[in-house]
Image (cartoon, rainbow, N blue to C red; front, side, top):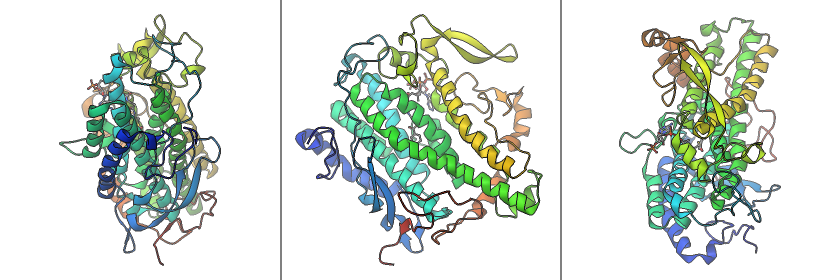
Length: 488
Ligand code: BYC
């Protein structure tokens, strides 16, 4: 067996030669039961009829190879028995560090001593988001609009669990005792907990319903993609290889988000058209059709987009400059960028609010890496919104969903504390607050959605507020019973 082929003979499928590293194997074996305890406590919680989710058979994809083709197989699995594995993309021969002051040197196979703390922190922050999202989504199965969607939720959840494994492997393999302690801490923090919160803001917010879930997987998982892309450039090769493989799984999460929001928009637009309603603000009549009005979708979009922008950190950041300089974290598509990959001389235009207007101000590019990644992210977000709007225009309705201004509702960085409307108008705090309900979801929205979303457990049936998908998943038709109760 080569190091790249996946060993399935052990409890922990892996392509990192775990069987030959007894010390690491023992450390991971000690961590495993604690992870399972966390999964059972904080993973999907609820029932289908009388059966707990954790006992149901779910049509899940499991990674079985790290090759581009045929890397996953589908089968019925009970979630606690999912084969969470440690999978790294194949090692590139003679890979060099692609950026920063060590550019051109051989990529590190062990932790560079001088950067140990910074590297550990990046890995811990990345690792912390994975269980956090599972915690945020744990009750959603109770209101799943179909078996197809319930299965997608559980798929996302087990893969976020695997992504935690990916980071824990790096901590335990490369960071000794403090890595093992960090691995334990990752299971101790809890999303939204006052005393032991998750590390980044958006991961302590609620994901209370399916519209939020789809917007989260569209927007927040996309931050995951951008950050993983940036870490996949890392000169620390094991991190690079880990992130490269995680990105393959991440793509499905964004698919779930993009198509999920699209299907909700489609259901609304078509129901409005069929009922002859062309005013998107005729809320009561639209809601009485059992669909979600478009302005509410926009308010939720505003919330999730703005919370996610905060995940990029401050626009100008010495942390980001240090991580780049030292070769630990690159830019989005670093190797495809045509410049010196060191940025000692170059500048980058950062959006700032100055003298009563938003302006692009050139700052040293090294300090502006968070701003640059965020700008790349905003560009990447646009495609889905355009597709969602097509459903609306096809139904002959005049309404467009839009990304809010980057300065809207921000808590981190340049625009923190500035009262900005979704359109980018700067106002004062009191005026902004008096319009809060136009910008962000209200208590009334919450109550409406809570009432609307009920679990649907007939194969092939979908809740009124979401259109069926175009096709099924893992070779199965849409009406397949993706989540099954054993012995029924
Ligand atoms: N909340 O220089 P600054 C994913 C802290 S999502 C709370 O502005 P920096 C996923 C920061 O830690 C991707 N604190 O920013 C998606 C620092 O604290 P210290 C997750 C925040 O460091 C869906 C201080 O403020 N991965 O994978 O350049 C489902 C000053 O920081 C926040 C990563 O983010 C915040 N929003 O950049 C599942 C990659 N923002 O050190 C998974 C790894 C900043 O002074 N992390 N702070 O105590 C990083 O690259 C960077 O840490 C950040 C921040 C981009 C997050």
